[in-house]
Length: 87
Image 1: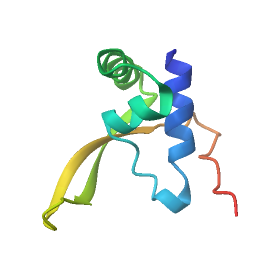
Image 2 (image 1 turned 30 degrees about the vertical axis):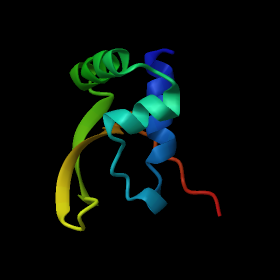
Image 3 (image 1 turned 45 degrees about the vertical axis):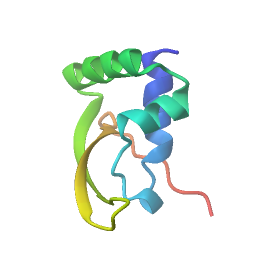
């Protein structure tokens, strides 16, 4: 897997339906088949190059309490947009 596969997974997850909140590291690993260390390295590279941005997602924990977790989202190049959700 390459950075392109990671970016594609983030693009697909970043639809209006999802709120464009990005994915957590474990979700990226499931979507791309990457191991955690490689996914984290590619995320770091994407953060440095500006193709990925850090987000905060609000989730409900198993005990029902809210929590904020870190996610990562694709940053579209100028003149491009995030793909629209298919209906």
